[in-house]
Length: 530
Ligand SMILES: [Zn+2]
Image (cartoon, rainbow, N blue to C red; front, side, top):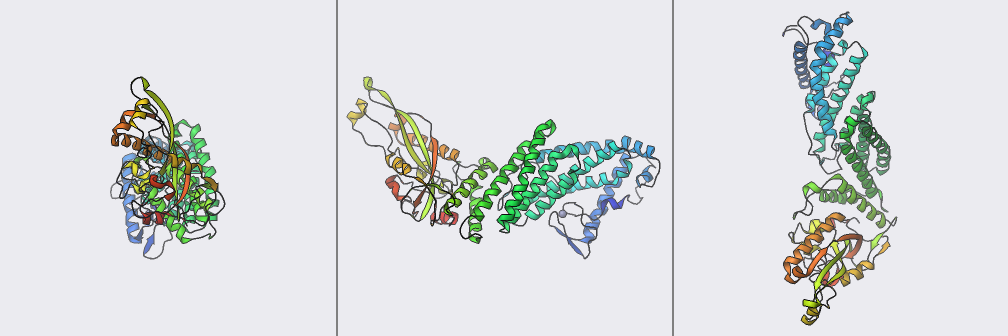
């Protein structure tokens, strides 16, 4: 074959998208076509020019892989199967093999991350990215040499490569779509996952991938239905997707070379459960379909997937598990609002129910002088505004005392005599907090807008730890006396509140212990589900 000979096997590369490289429908009419895989509109002439480019690459590949004057065999008309087999085994297969190995490695690397994103958010994957075009050009090469694979082994080998290249190409297109939070990406994500699962279906060694992509296509379809406000269809699609993801995990567990996939499958499963909570949030409530709920949900999702200044919610701590956790709490709250469930509520007047983490703070301290010195064990209680990530965002800066009940500032003043004699019983004063928290009861939350927690239990515990350290710095007496403390979240309560200007007690029933900052009133209103 000489460099001037015509490109072989043009039929292997029918029309292709010049943006992502995926095959386009061959019967395309008109001047412009929109790719159904990546959404790019392009002129047909440009798509054809891209096909010519691919043909040149295939030519060059064949020239390198096949000895001179054997090119005619590739066309499919030559009869000698032995000659073809030799060409395949000695030329083509070694030439494909190194590229295949590398592509498979990259594909599995990509799949070790989650492959879907919640609406209005971008995927948290910091994993590898690549150009889907490269994968699809490789796929075209593989398809150009199928006529040389005469025995079953070679045919199976090519089919495996074709499946991996196609799946990888679609997944890379999805990786690009997942980085753009636009609302209309889900039909594309679903179609690409479906396309990948179609080619994987018959591949015995790739069943974990097949099941996963089938599950992912259902997850994308379900999310698309949610965005179209069809919660019932969303639930059906999600219920169908879940067993495929679980199957995929099971198969990957049984195959050592696929165990790298498990972390990514677990992220997909977590995201599927989070999406189920989204369906609950959107479909719960007397009003049923409600555009306002979708609007609030958008603000909520953007808020909980953004880091908060002060380091209490860092970018690295925002992951799909955390989002799943917060969405599940929000769904529970929505059910209580609709009277279909209950949450812990404090009975007190207020126009907006705010979430508070109840934190038990056991500590010991040293009191008394000389022979009266003794250690005292105390268990006090604190409330942490579960909205603190947006509170610390604004006026409060990163002062951890501003979004908690500042119990160490509220300690009872004891006499000098009592302190020397070791008669102090506590160095904190959270009495009112214990009263309020113990008054909370399991109740529905009808008729009052409510904000779901924006922080997790672990983050509330961290904030209390920071608060304790900060309290020691503020007060030398506490610094000297306070010993061990291991705060522990014991409950989540909703307290009807009246957030107003900074400094005004947001939650009046806590009196002077009401946290100073629970979030800007306008921000809280935007996050309140009515
Ligand atoms: Zn495309």
